[in-house]
Length: 317
Ligand code: PMP
Image 1 (cartoon, helix red, strand yellow):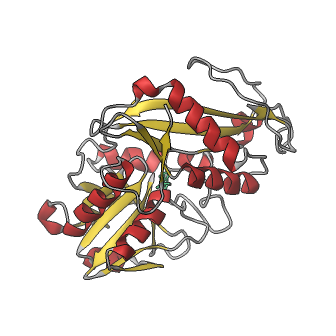
Image 2 (spheres, rainbow, N blue to C red; image 1 turned 60 degrees about the vertical axis):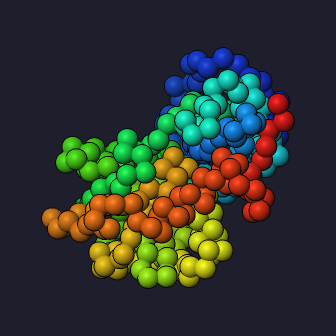
Image 3 (tube, rainbow, N blue to C red; image 1 turned 45 degrees about the vertical axis):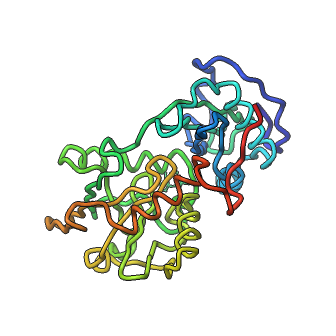
C-alpha cells in the first residue's frame, strides 16, 4: 500500500513474491528512512493458525514512524494486512513444533528525494517465510561475546525503534563474533561501557535467585514484545522482575542468563566472554528458569494451553 507524507494508505493487494521497483533516489535507499517489524504465525495441533500480539508490532511501528518522520498504517490496517498475507500463504505455515511462519512488515520512504529530507511517498508491504529455529543449537545454550569497541545505539539516536540503520551498525561486530565461534554479540551502553543493552536482535535477562532483571527501556534498546511478554509471564510465576540498569559485573555473577526475541523466543546463554575471560552458566545446561519461561511462552504461542493472557489472535480460515 502507498501513501503521501500525510498518511492515508491506499488499499493494498496480495501479489506473488518478487522484486519491487523504487527510484534510485528513494528516501530509504539514500537516507535509511525505513522501519521493519517481525512476528510469527504458529500452527495449532488442530490445524488453525495463531498470531502472537500483532497489535504490539503495529504500535511499535507507529512509534518508530514518528521518530523517522514517516506516516504509518493504523493498528487495524496493520493487523488486517498481516492476517490477509498469512491467510494467502497458509500452506507455508509449518505443522506444530516444526517451526513457524515469519512475517516481515516493512515501511519505507519510497518516494524520490535529493536533499536530506523525509520522502514524499511511502510504501508499506509484508512478506513471509517459513522458519525453523534461529540459532542452529535450538534450545541449547548460546555463547555470546561482549564487544565493547562496538555500540549499536547512543542516547538521542534511533536505538529504541526498529529502523533499518540500527542493523547496519551491527553487521561487522556480529561477523567478528561469528568468526571467533560465538553465536552473537552483547552490547554495552555507549556512555559508560558498563551497562547491558541487548544482543544484535534480541533482549537480555539475568537471573539471580528469585529476581529476574533486564535492561530498562531508555531509548537505546528495542522494546521487545517477547521481553514485555516474558516480564509478565515471570511475574505471574512469582518471580520478582526488575527493569533497570544491569551492569556487566552483575551479568558475570548471575545464576542464569537468557535472551528473548521473536526469532530466538527464549534462548539460554551458556557463556559470556568479556575482555578475554569466559564465564559459564549452569554447566552449559539449559537453566531451570529459562526452560520454564520458554515452555510457558511457547505453549501460549502454539495454543497448547488456554490463552489466559488474551495474547493470541486465531485466524479464521
Ligand atoms: N532487540 C533487537 C535489536 C531486535 O532486532 C529484536 C527483534 N525484533 C529484539 C530486541 C526483540 O524484539 P521482539 O521480542 O519484539 O522480537
